[in-house]
Amino acid sequence: MSSALQDTFARDRLPPADQQPQFLFDLPELRFPAQLNCATELLDRHVREGRGERLCIQAPGVRWTYADLLDRANRIANVLVHDMGLVPGNRVLLRAPNNPMLAACWFAVVKAGGIAVATMPLLRAKELKAVIEIGQVSHALCDAALAEEMALAAQHCGTLRQVRHFGHPGPDGLEALMKRASPEFHNVDTAADDTCILGFTSGTTGVPKATMHFHRDVMTICACWPRHVLRPTADDIFIGSPPLAFTFGLGGLLLFPLAVGASTVLLEKAGPPQLLEGIQTFGATIVFTAPTSYRTLSARGLDLRRSALRKCVSAGEALSASTRALWKEATGIELIDGIGATEMLHIFISHDEAHARPGATGTPVPGYRAKIVDEAGRDVPPGTVGRLAVQGPTGCRYLADPRQKQYVQDGWNLTGDAYLMDEDGYFFYQSRTDDMIISSGYNIAAPDVEEALMQHPAVAECAVIGVPDLERGQLVKAFVVLRQGQTGDDAMKKTLQDFVKATIAPYKYPRAMAFVDKLPRTQTGKLQRFKLHESA
Ligand code: 3UK
Image: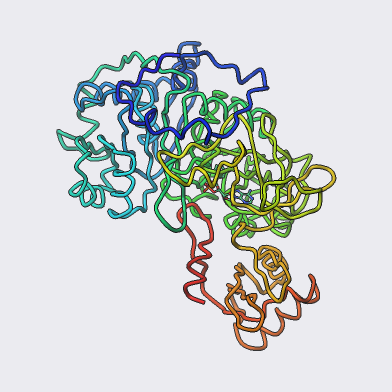
């Protein structure tokens, strides 16, 4: 294999061989050529094979065919190389809400052999600066709507040499440069193991970690979960809420639809109301979003039943049995749950509609294997709670980060989740490893208590943590968002406590309870338990 990356920054910072996970390439569909540029496979190929006029990307007021996207991506690639001096291997910051230009920029970077560093739209200058410094980012393509924080961050970042904005009319804007650029571009002949993505973990605390993914990894995730579990067709219309900067969104809303020649709808705002409207307006057939969003949308079951929606994917957080039941009742559709991670690039345990089991995430996706281990890394028998360990064709590579040794042990990726596997090989999420509450010697998984509370009709949402307690070590504390019209008083507290005692083992009931208006969440929809700990 010969790397095309003149700038060897990423290659020089790969974890040492003995700290890398073991990779599995058993599936025949995972035999990739030594030289591979994933943009060629996902985009150019469709046009070359005569599908240029098929619909590719839609957004309010925008309808791009595959030929349109290729034209935009090629022009931007030429701007990157000829106007902005990009050299293969350089890192390019991408900053925009989910929209067609962001998708075109992503492909432009990858075509030119650059490394795409997509960032969450809501990041502030301080967080952007950390990303730019860790990734030694030299170029940026930014939506004009997000220019302000970009400028603040750029002031303090010496490595960042070239910034262009799109979505504004000025003569130095990206669109003006694109007009003058050629619509032809010869994709850089990258090696299958050249890095093309730096994915920052949506970590809720601490210094962010950058994960490195190769061109091969991008093609791998398209060949595994979508092909074996989701099984979309070229006529599907994808839609959803996760940002393209989150690999859940990048896969679900860009890579997977393009891998099968289907189309995708990109929404800049994709809260439940916009998502519902988008599903109706664009006739979307496959939706990707998080459990909380499904809970809210379930109130619009009748509208959804009248839509073209046929497949619904939940990831990012554990899907409770009650949310699965709620969605099925409201829409008639069985949710597809899947656990993925930035480190693994996409989903590695999941199930299709026919194999859904309430409370279970599913079984390992073809190409992956998973097991449960104890503190010492020894396998534990079925039914025992322990640490989830996975191996497959993708895996964790932190960019020059000592935390590699925590995530990868003995060649296995340890996701930081407590799981159990039943006799049938189904994996059941318990909690994050550090969210296990130990109270009076009992192990209590916070999601267990949340699931019980959520079954009460007065509860809209809730979160449970362990708070320090002199007598019991930790005390189970619930933060509860009530449905409209309900009152959070002592009587309600008692009602909910009694309800939990009657639903699950009584020792798990929340001795402490707070009623709140909403729960703190990250931009990827994850509950920020550390914020609850701070406020407890
Ligand atoms: C949790 C889940 C239970 C789990 C992601 C799909 O979430 C993604 O990546 P992140 O790096 O977080 C990883 C962690 O999130 N988690 C995700 N999905 C589930 N827990 N059930 C689930 N279905 O703690 C995991 O370790 O932000 C999800 C695809 C790509 C992704 N990056």
